Image (cartoon, rainbow, N blue to C red; front, side):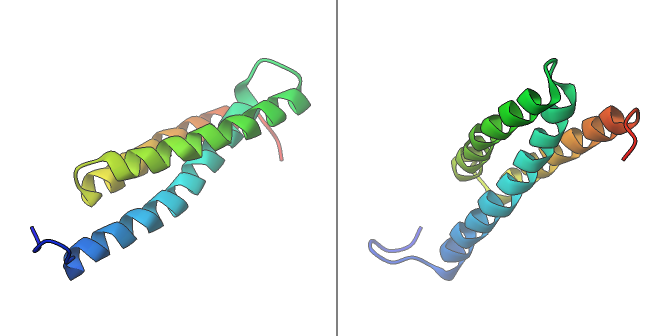
Length: 100
């Protein structure tokens, strides 16, 4: 731990990495969740899109909280990447029946 009132370069880099991961990863996961929910919510398409878009704000906030609450940046990265991978796979499965 650094001396009181001083931060090390490693601590600053960790915080910067978390900010980038929270912004970029949060946006990516929220976009995937929005697309998946838009296709799978059991309501009219316009209502499903509006509901999914509103829920995306909660997803983004949840990812930001997750990134800053994990013990290490690597664990946060793996969690966000795993979540994106699962959502991407589910979206791919959901889109198999839809033509562009």
